[in-house]
Length: 185
Image (cartoon, rainbow, N blue to C red; front, side, top):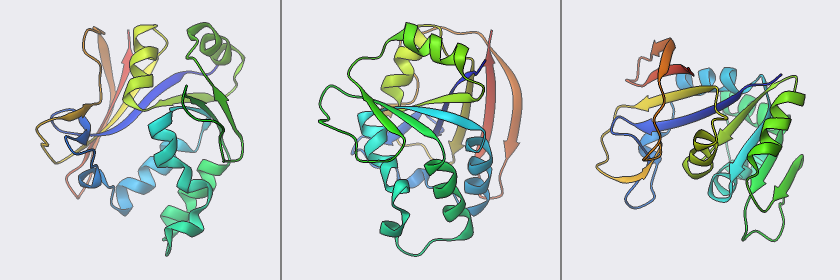
């Protein structure tokens, strides 16, 4: 049985994008990117909202990114090797390999996916993660904290959700980022 993991890079004050929709302040350096690659490697399926899909789909055609390092090339390979489910009422179609489009987030379908999967699943994007958290589907949170306070924007965690968590891993990076991994109780 796979576990559902909410993974995000966020500011210290809890935002994945600032008030202008920018997230360049959260760009991982090579050390953090390699670490994220290793977190992503065992994932079988990524559940994505439309905005997250639009941000991440460039990894399906990394030649559009220009010059790549070994670490970014590795991430592109890992990303292309996994399945994706995009939840959107507005997209007409998806344009990437191994990707299917769903119109509605169905907690029971995700629960069935978890039960039938031999690999873990991630939920990406704070809106979709909020739905999964509210449905009690998230088993683990993996948060990379950027050394920035942005003062507002898109919150990484939803209001009105209470969870008791157990810290099971932490790590500091030379560039100032920190990783916190929590299991839901």
